[in-house]
Image (tube, rainbow, N blue to C red; front, top):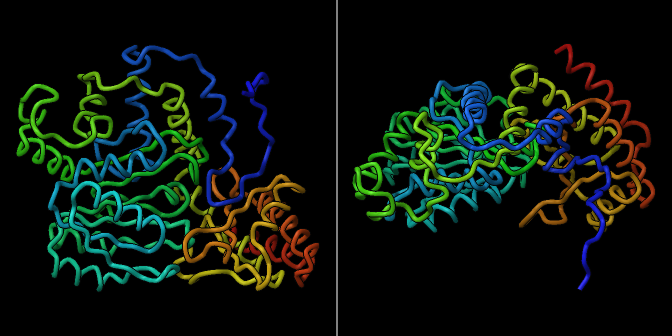
Length: 411
């Protein structure tokens, strides 16, 4: 058996894939602060501050805006496990791999799923959502805002309005877009939204922000009352409560309330990280941060096109922070990824399902959504592609990206 005798010393890589992205140095410094007790007044004050900060990040007035300890998927699961009851009708908008994930989790919860499916790379038409609302009369509609598997962003505003009209709750997974694309929880009538720190927010994976509207909280409380659970006054553990204790949002709201009802030991260092992530967003300003991601995305696209490569997807619904690039015929995607990592310490990735090996996904998000990182990535990409015999316009990508960045800054 091999025993690790050396401390961890990972390489310093530029993470320009679909996430995680590099972590902001201020966030890393915050994580190095001393751990204190979870009920220490200093700690509970940090919790309250974090709730207030994420209301600004989510652009909401929702009181119940807090953190789930775990990766972005932990918040997705907490939301769906707490909302979906066996036999509940749920409409899932499926635009890629993470739409399939929502469908799977709802099914595991015993929900009856009706998917509105589109081919990968496309988005769901609100007219089709309205048809599903009329036909199936769901209690919940679930969607992914930006599906990194397809580099596509689903427009949400019209769908949120339809959900209100037809009295359905609206859940959105904003893992890949929060802090990098417009996301207006209240204005778009989103009842539950979840995210992660590791993409546009420039934090590490391991903490997942969530926000709940009053309508969503009422639905959770109603469910617990109907099932004889904690909200009805039954002792903890009695009654047919939800399948998960750890992801029970009613219990987590009690934990984040002034009563601080014990539920788990808070992941102190991750809370420090999440708090500093949100401070950075608020300091920069939501609109300025989104504009920076837009500029980075436009520069990346301009550079890729100028070097003679094809960009994947519909530009009207493309995510700001992840760009898909078609892999040329006869080229092994993994070979290019390996050379980018080995020769330049830059990570880019391929995709999943029907797009496996068909596209590269190149991100520019969080601290990496800046001109220098985009230009470095494009320079390395040009060198690797040319070295593998792929005909490209050497130098054109860099010039086009610089021009696009500067042009976008004055648009």
